[in-house]
Length: 429
Image 1 (tube, rainbow, N blue to C red):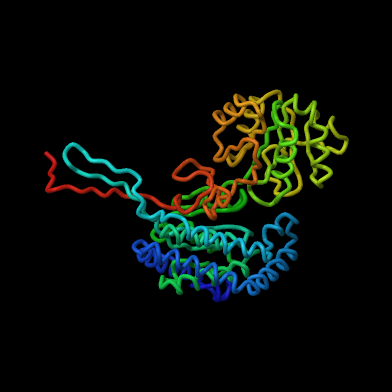
Image 2: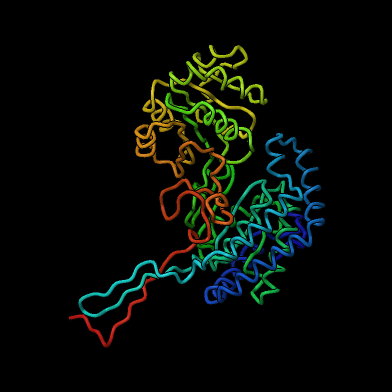
C-alpha cells in the first residue's frame, strides 16, 4: 500500500486493507531480517536524497495540511508542529543520513560467555519484526519512524494524524523510493492510506501481524492505545516537563535555560510546562525570571508566592498542575527546597523530562536519585529531550514506561535479542 491510494473511507474496506498491509509487512520483515546493513543504509541515503529532490512537492503537500489545520482551528502551537519549512525538510534528510551512518544495531553481540560444560552462549540483537507507529500532527515523524524502523531491520506500518495526511504521504513516497533504489521491498515501510479512525482500531488488534505499537501523541491517543491494544505498547505519554530553579542556581544560566525550555518550541513534548522555584531563588531572582517570561509572551500561571512577584501573573488553579499546555503558558510555584520540588514532580509529572538548575552537587544528586523520569538534566534545557540531541540521529518517540525502552527510542531500542548457543556434541546429564 502507498500514499497514492484514495483516502475516502466510504470506498475503502478498512479491515481488509489493514489485514493486507499486515500480511505484506510480515513478509517484508522476514526479508529485512537478513538484508545486509549496507542495503538498509543505502535505502536511507537514497530516501534522504529523494526528500531533498522533492522538497517542493513536500512543501506543497504541507500547504494543503496547513489549510486543513486552519479550518479545524488548530492552536498556534499545533500549527507549528504541523508546519514544514525548507530547513525542516533539510533536517529530515539530514536525520536519515545520520541514522544511516550509525553502527548497525542488528547482530550486535550484547553478551557472550562459556559454561563449564563447554557450551558457548551469545546474546545477539535482532529486529522486533513489524512496528506499528500511530502519531499526531508532526509530519517529520514519518521520516524519523520509517528511517529508524528500517535501520533496525523492522518493517513499519505508519498511521499519521489526519492533519498531516498530505505531508506524510509525500514523505512516505520518498522513503519507498529509497527502498526500491536499494533493492529492498517497498512494503517494508507502509502508510495507512486513510484518515478513518477505524484504521487505528484495526492496528491495535493485529496480533498476528504487528509485534509492537508505538503511540506518539497526546494523552487521548496514548490512553486509547493503552486501553485497547492487544499487542505490546511502547508508551509515549504526554510531556509534563518541570524545571526546578534551586537557591544555588547560577542566575544567568537559570534564566537562559528557563526561557529556552519554555519558548524555543512550545508544541513539542520537551517543552517545560511547570517552573518550580526555591524560596531563596524566588526572593533574589524570581521577579526578574517571571518578568522575562511574561515579556517574551508567556502567560505565567502562579501560586500566591509567584503572583506576589509580578502583578501580571495569572492565578493558578488546581487544573494547571500536571497539565501539558503545548502553548506559551507555564505554571509556576515556589517550593521550600529540592524535596518540595521532588514531591511536586512525583505527584504531577508524567515521568518524561525534568531539569534541575543548581551549582550544588548534593542538590543535583538528590534530584537525580529521587526522581524516576526517563530523562533528568542538570543546568540544561528540557528541549534536549530529543533523539537527535542524544546522538541517535532521530527518534520514534520518548518512552515513558519502564519496560524494554525508556527515553528517546532510537534504532538500538527497536531491537530485541536471541541466544545463539554452540556446543561440540554436548549433551545434558
